[in-house]
Each structure stands twice: as structure tokens, then as C-alpha cells.
Picture 1 (cartoon, rainbow, N blue to C red):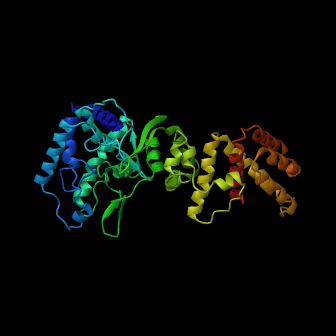
Picture 2: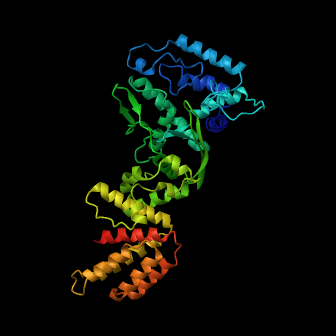
Picture 3: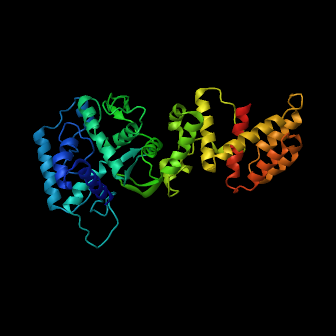
Length: 434
């Protein structure tokens, strides 16, 4: 199972990084269990394993309505888990991410008459692997198959334990959600301080029962952080959800080159601080699950919400009148430029917008209704045919005809799918000049 594979991959990286020789069982016994489970609040759910007491309510214990289990009670549960691992076949009750052996259960796997054996080493590794899942908005987790990222996640485990022990009302069992918040914080070089790792870190909210929860981070902020930290062109992630029913999307490549591209363009054109303000708006048009259906996560999945009417219906943008609108306005332009994958088209679109802006006025600089209508017809075009027809009508009012016809010819030679994007960028550039 993938949780076991990720757990073993992490152990290889851990042993190499820290000069140790742990196998999965020893790491589980000496490092993992004491940190995750042998304290008042668990760092992750133990599912329906012997570690979990279904009769106890964590909310009641956190609010002081019921006492936490004693060390002796926890030890008894721990002994039952180890005994079951050593004597039973791997299933969902002792191996994280594995199916139930009951074919009628909602967490069962595919039916087979083959006997599939799993070693104890794989069972222990599955707990480690599941704890490395990165929770994202939408209820899914990602297991990254990159050793460096696994070690980065591990560095946040002790910080979560610190927060749980020092904050009485903080809810446990949220390691995957924590991992997502931790990575986005750890990869933000403008905020993260190695000497004070939790400084400036506040991913918490308080519910009506006064219990503190960790907010789930967006997949875009996590991937943006990874793309800035590592120069890899692509990494692989396994997308899944473990709960009352298990859901698997499968292995999805993340094209870090494409994810980096709009971020770098925004920071290059509008400044790094502004780029940071825009990060929460990337990838808001479609959910994470829908984005995965394309088979790869790249610049297309980074589409900001609300842009499609501009691209496909020729909607004219309005001049932004506050800081939020300015960020969104600029975000649209940058995503379109990233989709066109040709930085030179930024200047081309701006040059054409300037020519059209000039053409909308008479020689005395007063606005001409006829010229304005011709310009608007050109700006509202959504395909090559309409664009060229409008260009033919307005060319006689253009002062720099060679430049104008050159750009029109370049647009005409574009792939048809790119034309609506360029024309949308043109509309936004024209509105910027106004």
C-alpha cells in the first residue's frame, strides 16, 4: 500500500539525514508512538485500531467534562495493538490506508481469491506514511514521493505536539491538516524563522464550543511553497481520503514549472509583496478534485475565479476601484499571460491597447463616437474572424499602421485556442490605460 511505501521512503531519508539505522517497527516504538499517541491528546486519529476508545469523546476531554486516559490505560491499548499486528493479517484496523478484510465494509478493497501478505514492517510503515499526508481544502490529503518534502513535514511534527501540550483547548487528531499549514509556513522565507519556528504562524480558529481547530490550507498555497523551495520540474503526489469511506484519486503529477510561472510573472511585473497578497486567489475557479481530472496539476488548475466570462463571452473589465479589485484585476492578466506561455505578448497586448486608445479619439483628442464603437467592436471580439473583421474597419484610424497590421497578423497566426486569451489580455490592458 502507498502509505507503507511512503513510510519506508521517509525512513530511508531520515536514516540518511540523521545517521541512524531505524527500521519501521523500531521507529514506530521509539519515536512515533511516544510522540503521536502516548500523551493526553493524539496527533492523529487511530481509526478503529485498539489505540482508539470509541466510547470517549475528545471534545469532552478537551473541555474538561471527562478525564483523559491514564498512562496505564494507554499502555494497555498499545499492547493490544502490537499483539494484533504480530498475530493478524493487515487490514484497516492495524494498517493505515489499508482496506478492511470485510468485503461488505465501506472501506473494503477489491475482491480477490489471492492471499496478499503484508509484513509487520509494512504495517508499521503505514502509520508513518499516513502521518505524512498533507491535508488540503476539499477533504483530501496528498502523499508526496519526494524525500526532501517528507523530511520538511517531519520537522513540523514536534511543533504540533508542542502546540497541543501548551494549548489546552487545541484539538488533536489533525496531523494531516497541520502538515499542510506547516509546509506553507515553513516554505515562506519572508516569515519562517528557524530560531522561532512558530513565530507568525497562526492557522487556528475557535468553534462555538471554544475548541481550537486548525484551518485547512489550500492546495495552491502548499504547491506554490513547494515550487519556490525546490527547482524540480515535476513531482508526483498520491491523492486520497481516509474516513468512514476511503476515497482514492490516485497518482497525480504536479508540474512545478507551470505552477511557478504565474507566481514569478506576478512578482516580476507587480512586485513580490503584491504577489504574496495574491496567493490565496490562485486556483479558486475549480476545486482540487476537479483539477485532478485533467491528469496533471499545472497552470490551467491555477485559474482564478470569475475570469471565464471575460475569456469566452467578451465581457469588458471595469477599472478596479480598491486594493482587492486591483489584485484580482492584475491576477487575471498574469494567469492569461501564463496560459499564452509567451512573455513577449505582454508588450504586444500593451502596444495594441495603446494604438486602439489613440484611435478612439479625433485629432483634437476629443472622443469620437464612431471610432469608439469601432474600438469596442475589436475589443469585444472573441475569435480570429471577428477580430480581423474589426481590425479591417479601424485600421484607417491607426497612426502606426505597420505596427498595427503586424500585431494583427501575429494574432491571426496564433493557435485558435490562444486567441481568446490574448484578446482578453488586450481588453484588460486597454482598461488599464483608461
